[in-house]
Each structure stands twice: as structure tokens, then as C-alpha cells.
Image (tube, rainbow, N blue to C red; front, side, top):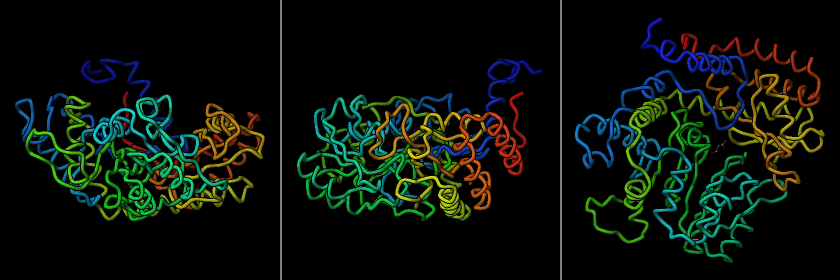
Length: 431
Ligand code: DSN
């Protein structure tokens, strides 16, 4: 055993990582926000980029020795600009929540009004949840959906007219349908609001041309890099306009958004960029530029549709009746099993999902009426529509027998047989 290896230095962490690796290998991963990065992305993420301080931006740093991290960050920026068709990309946000905080910090003053989706209707904490910064430092107003779970633009427009928000947010963690960005643009213009598109869940689908892009419609687009985009945990803020090279104050205008965003990240909110993450984001963007990535994005949606069809054939109810993207919400109300019970029972069979509220849920978010399922991770492993049909049947079997340990054991064996056909990181070990 080499003392300098992970296993030599910290056997407890090495052994636990090995257990996590085996969990990822043997299970069916249906958490809609998760994915499996390539070993190239992992190599960049585990690199010496972590050793370097580089506060500032390429060619404008507060530390010496930044020529190579400048190259890395410039590559990430140029690739992001090309892939998302924007004038400016800030690739430094540590993750999605701090990135949204930076957008607020750039464009708003505390107390200003924001309009975003209610968390229990598929929004995100940073879109105006009362116990989040977005709902406590700002005057947050939330929109919901129609009774079938679709965005209700009449409600959104009427709330916008009544409350005159300075920022309107579109983008969801649990919305299974295509988002009409143009309608949000029109409403934002009617009330003089900035428009933020949070594409964290669907960035990979946008690059793969499976969902329309908001990047030339919204004023600011934010995405995390680790969901359908299949990169490391991080985020990017995309905008159009120009960056001022001086340190002089700039006025709050659309043209100045890139400058305002850069200044909100540093010195506003963050210190040194995580250069190892920036390198891994650059690698993920390089992968997303390859023609195979379009095939991947297309397959994610085909798989989601196939899973939705299988679940429906098994008698389970889906919010909006199906999906246009990578995820679906199962409303379990008629099954007598709660979302929490389903998450636990499926987990025992090594099918990993998360409990989720459904629109107009009568239960509380900690034990809601639904579960959320998504196909980005399984599609990366190579699973196709036939597998999705089987997985839909296995899910229904567990939900219909949530308290039956022998059924869950049987399903767990079937899950292992299925995932064994799709090796995950076959050469990787932490031991
Ligand atoms: N936690 C993420 C998700 O699961 O959708 C959102 O940030």
C-alpha cells in the first residue's frame, strides 16, 4: 500500500467512496438532476487547478502566476459563448444558488420585487422561497400553475401587472414540459422587468436542440453545469452586451449586464475561482460540442417518453400526462403510497428517485404526494427505450407492494441484472 495513495492516507474515505461507487454502479439512477461525468471531466476536477488562487478575471488577476489558469478560464468562456450563443459567459459561480444570488445582487436592491415559480410548483429555493435569501431579502411573489400542471400565463401576467416585479424568473426543477421563453419576455417587457432564465435542468437539452434556447430572449441565463450538461458541480451566468474594462460604476441597463454580473461575482460575492472546476467545466463543454452530445440529448428525451409511457401503462398518473423533456412527476395520490414512502421503498430496491410535491399538493413538502424521475444519468450509461419499459414496470411493482420486503428483494436482483449490462467506470477503484 502506497502511503501517498488515498487508500494509504485515508482508508475510511477510500472505502466509503468505493461503497458509493458500487451503489452508483448497481442502482438505477433516476434523480432528474444527476448525471455521470466522463473520466476526462473527473481528471480535470481532481487536478492541480485547486492549488491556485486567481481572484479576478483572465488578464485582470490579483495574483501572480495566473497565465495557465487564464488559458483554462478563457477556454471555458469561449466554449460556453459558442455553445449557448451569447456575448458573455461568467464561469466562476460556485454552484446554481450562488449564481442566482449573483444575478439578484447585480440587478436588484434588497426589498425589490421578484416573481418566480413557487417551490411546490416546480420552482427553486432561489426563485423566491420565504426562508431563502431570495424570499427574505427581496419581496418575492410566486406563481403556480393551472390545475393540470401547465404554466398559467394568465396568472403570471396578472401577478406581474399587480406587483410590478423588477425581475421575472422562468426555469424549473420539476416541470416536464417545454417552456415558452417568448411569453415570459413579453410579460417582462409589459411591466419593465428583467427576465432571468434558469436553465439548470435543461442546459444539455438546449445544446442538443431538444428544447428552445432562451439565451437571446432572456436578459440573463443561468445554468448549473452538472445536470443534463454532464459536467462538474458548478454554474455559469450567460448574458449579452459588453464588459467594461474600467473600474468606474456603470448604470443599470441591459447593455451593462455582463459588467454587472462580473462585478457581482467578484468583488461582490466570491473570492478565488475554483480553477479545477473551471477546467472540468471546459472539458464538459468540449464534450458537449461533439456530434454525439446531440444524440445523447435526443436519447434522454426518447427515454423519458418511453418511461412515461411504461408508467402510464402500469396505471400510474403523471402530472400533465407525460413529458417533453428529461423528467416526469408521478402523482401517487391514488396509490395510497406517499412520495416519501415511495422514495424509501424504491431505494430499498436500488431504484433512486426523489420525493416531490405535485401541483396543488395537499401534503407537506417533507412527505409530499409525488416522486420525480429523470433519465439523464441512465442515458449516459447507454440505456434505451426497451430498458425504460422494464424500469417502469419495476417501479410500479415496488409502489404497488411498497411494504413487501420479498418483492423489493426480487426487484433489487432484477435491477442489478439490468445495470450489470451497462458497466459504469469499469476501471475505477478507490481501494
Ligand atoms: N437540487 C436540484 C434538483 O434536484 O433539481 C435543484 O437545485
